Length: 379
Image 1 (cartoon, rainbow, N blue to C red):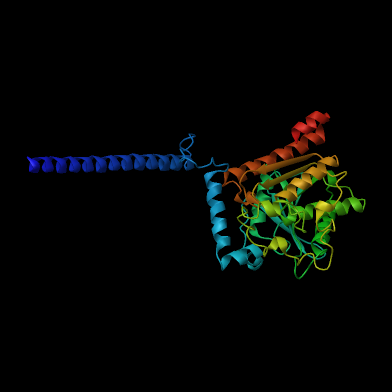
Image 2: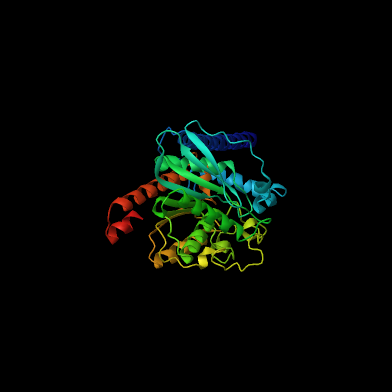
């Protein structure tokens, strides 16, 4: 009898063990199917097959940017974290030494070369039915150490399209360390004066710039105002670098978040080559210290995780206090000059669409009169 009981207990234990194993396998299969379903929905989302939100594992926060932007953001962070590539990228060494192939101008455009007193410039125009009512003076970025590159020729094409065929004038202004301040500002002023010589009126000129080019756009307007020269019709600023003292709060709060300039004090945003022996608080160097009364309507775009976020936020606050019509657009979880994604990233596409809307608003302002409330709604 004792032996029978032992056999029964042994069989019962085997049965319980079997049920436990089968239960674990069932749970694993259930989780595997759930993960497969999530991956399938994410793939469908990327391919545009569905508008349904992908399921997220418990505890994971909702994404505030597109999957495409997250991929690019992660790629930038990985490159800057590389011990060999990272420092060169963050300091601008790669940008400065970049050798690009000759730019192939699309068949619908024509490029005219110009010689300014100390630099060259080029005008991108539409071959058929060019719009001569306005011109964009584009001042490129690059931390004041990077020269003109093909990306800004692509930018010129977008400004042309969004502006319904307007010309785009881009000077290849001098950069540091060979040419510190005030070289870039002198070339920006020369470019503006050349447009005036070409019979463009200030009310037909929109100045646009990204990063250092955004700061230079503001410095140009400060210079024009100080010297009694009529200001342009509007300003388009993408992640403008307005504070070369790096005193804004986001230099600290976004220090670990910024995928491009974060986690180091050894990057181009702390570079003093352009400043030289001058005071970094000089408004022509750091426009955040300037006065904006009389400035034209301004569009400012910036990413929420940039170390330069406060450069834009402080600028918009100060300009609005001075009576300037300002639209500040902060794009969630976006990085420095994310507009370089052009029409490939949802956020950059939306930013460029906003640029087009801003140009159309300027058209309306030229032809119509608005109440103060209508002005506020437009910007």
